[in-house]
Length: 282
Image (cartoon, rainbow, N blue to C red):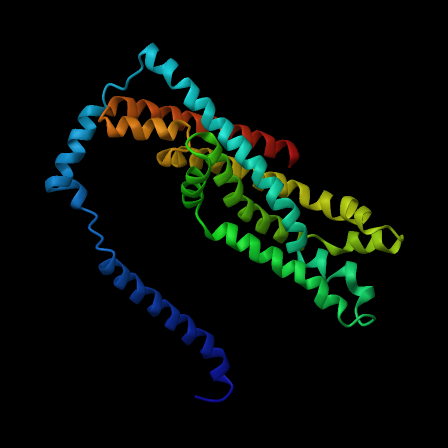
């Protein structure tokens, strides 16, 4: 092989190596995780599944039960709304520090480069600190946050709000920071050339470009918060999930199906509302 053909073949060999490594990890994971996809349809798994399916129908649409689940359904919506609002309050300020072009480099800081050798390093400290906080919030699943907050403040919707707020705050903060880092620098340069202050540059240069993406992703996380609020109910964080867990424990499968259908309608409604709002800002 000539020296000229080697650089061209090296990426191909690296890709082949990564593919083989992925296939090997897939096989090892399949065996280590004891994946048995057909176990659900044979033997004891099949019998348990049939018992559950037979108990599902007909779903419980009695007026008394529907009135009973109205409160946990509304509670799930309230948990998702307040949790998402708390996540925005946590994530947005941290994203301003976690966006590198707002803290220590980029157009806003070009004039200061070289005049103060240590200024850039000092400005980078809040950046790395904010990134570390966001990574910590994001690394802990909201299910674990809910368990911690249930121990701290007791059962009810508050632990669900706090769990979604902290967990999603880390996610939103990271995404917001990446959105700010991806804005077009040319309008920023134009505002800076007029002598505008940094708050004005942010309000009229950064924010108008980033706002559609900020709102779109916030609405998407609200959709996810509905599902998360239902799951967090299994650890006592209120909402419709807590009622699903109680019905499962009491083997009231007809109630479980009704609750799942209500949750499906709830998520579909939120998805349609979010899509409508996104179209309005597109």
